[in-house]
Image (spheres, rainbow, N blue to C red):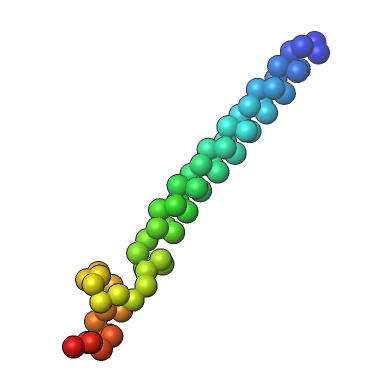
Length: 61
């Protein structure tokens, strides 16, 4: 009886850990994709045409 209950607890731990680890993996992927967006990590640059700051800066000519 003890062996069966231990095996059941072990399976529940495995499932819990698997779900938890998959959740952490998905959150890591989501964070990596969102934190690498150009609107978060961009600086104002004259050469970057995708940069909205480039249009608002005065020209240096």
